[in-house]
Length: 200
Image (spheres, one colour):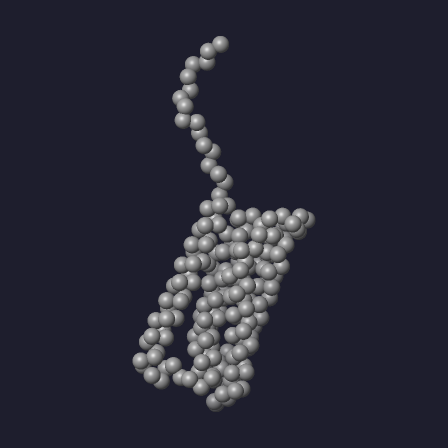
């Protein structure tokens, strides 16, 4: 159990760190800090993907009940969110990093609402945070508690996990919409006065 937990802890820690960094991106008001944190997030996401792939690949290549096999079995729940993070999140993070780099000549520039809206997009942080959440059952099982053994515990655990994912998604969507509305150009207000004849 201890060796299995040793394998899973770095994977879960990297995904958790990526989720925390992604959650804080829209709060950054400085372009330089936004670019720096986006670089950190890109590195964390790629590291998490690499570690997850190594553990899952090691589980496929090894036969028996080795710690790698048990760790890979625990990470199967996180494989789906990690795949979504590979397809969606990494691409958006790279775009955000490049967009923030356009302000490198003026690093003290406040971060535009458009960049902050892109940082708050649900597909940036949600897959990372769901992947971190999906590693929790594997950690619990590696620590010695089996959630699947008691049906009275499995159902509530699944319900709590689903509600947590929905709450995170709604929070990201609301925050993204708020920044997107601020990023839109102000509508030109037309005068309500009727045009009359020009008197000279």
